Length: 230
Image (tube, rainbow, N blue to C red; front, side, top):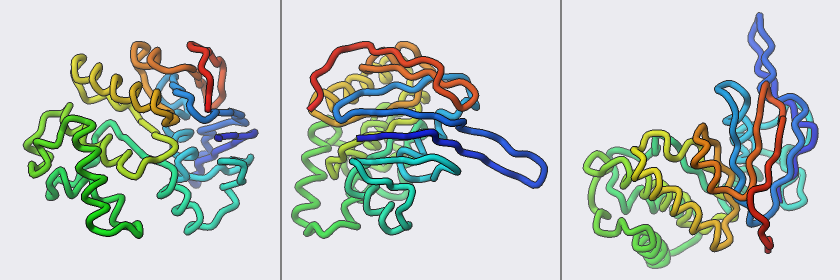
């Protein structure tokens, strides 16, 4: 599903050239739960942004479902994101002025779904994540754990093939963190491919594979579980 070959990402200023990724090659199959670990500044978030088509490699190729997507134009990349990829962030990134229902509906506004179809999808995902009783609340009226549930609901409301999670438990206490990881594990068992950046060894071990980065390179790849990918 995801195939990065010799990917380089360079950030350049007038005086400094920084290699965020340095000839990194990586494959992620459909149905995997891949955890990405490493020290701050090693390239974890850059890698996630490239996989999510938010950023592009300076060199190398990125194939998604067999297509070299780093050659796509902006509209093509946006279409791939919209149809295939969901994002979950450490800081939730909810719109404070919108209630839960509207936050979750946002990704569907840009589809061809009718209002009735959108409503059905939103209510189904809110029920699935046990947050439907908060559908009229604003984000500021929710706990951190509830906000992250809403963020996950928004990320999966359109049934993406891949869920990208950047430190999804970073702003949560241990109990809420466990609940979020249980949600991610359940989604993976249902067939969603998950790529998660984390500093937490405990969270990383929920995955089927752990990749360790250092100075923009993959230094180890540990297979934790043998899964029959579909």
